[in-house]
Image 1: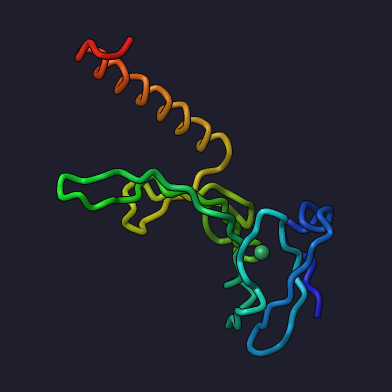
Image 2: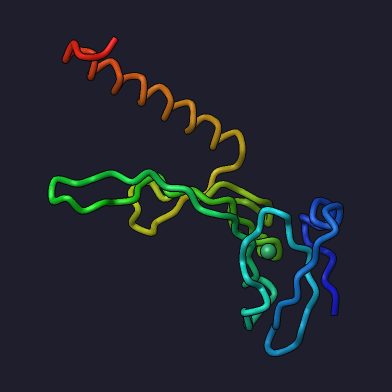
Length: 137
Ligand SMILES: [Zn+2]
């Protein structure tokens, strides 16, 4: 069985990569974007809507007072190509877990870029704070 009517069909089909996933034990060929690192062959999903693509994740390790390292600002490109009821309507988005709790929020490109701009501004403000120590320029 081949599935080809997802909202992302054109983008994925243009990449020419497919994956086989079991849907209730039935092998189904689906387009898979080049950035996806999910092992679809290991999945056995209940419904096609459960299929998702995900890329590598990034995080910012921060050492806590206790010495423990927390990973914050965990980001990952995700897509649920056959699920159209939520905000991203089957399109790829940037998933951001701000505090490493596992609670994620999805950002389309414009929103993600706005957040990145805020992070850059915040990082510069932190650098300015550090300059009050006089040890850096
Ligand atoms: Zn995939």
